[in-house]
Image 1 (cartoon, rainbow, N blue to C red):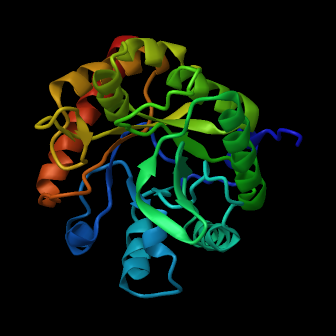
Image 2 (tube, helix red, strand yellow):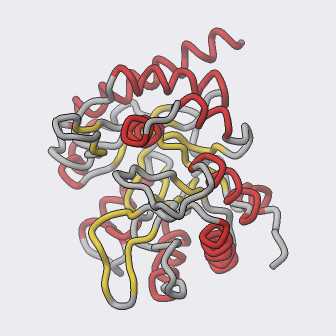
Image 3 (cartoon, rainbow, N blue to C red):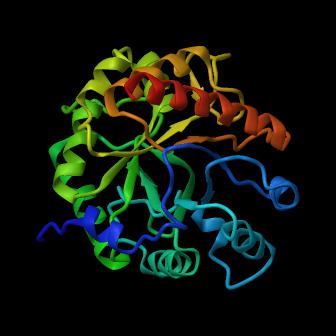
Length: 292
């Protein structure tokens, strides 16, 4: 299949009100809807899990549209299962396209993973074997999704707690080649890189160094649980010092990028989430000041 210039196409459908700025944003969660609309906090943008807004109406979509009137929105999918051996779910894609047309998001993202097979869906984002066959397969699915949605999407690296014995391509090279074969961009999750580097014993800076400079369109930051035998990506704690340091290294490599604070479990008060976003914003501003 011919690779289209998805970057140019995505920019052509953007306007000034929906472009995601190179500022810190926060994950939009239901407990914060009303407080956000009442106070209109100073934050660059919000990101939502796409599937939570697939309905034709109801409170979630109502509040999303109200908040969309004040902030740019990014759609972050968790259920498309791009790496599954099944055909892409056309019902899911149609729902996503309808939501894109309704919300006009600045970015649309999914994960480098699989999570379903047949009629069964698993409650996790499962890693792929890093082989040439898997690389060709998921890249073809990403191209198909982009053709259907008529826009470029960005793909996030996932956390993992095991490795396939058949994997023969380093994860960072696999992600890099996906962008080449599919034309997609990258949503670089710094916390996931750090978690995997500890769990699988590699240098996280080597990972960042391998990623194409112009491919990264968004960065994620989150917290992890270190109480067991490996690090678990929980999105339920503040960003660790180690991840902040790796984020600063990524900024030096890629430049300022839209940066999201994810917090999906044990959701804190909005003020706590905004303080984490402010930490990312401070680092972005310090980077811009140094490079100005």
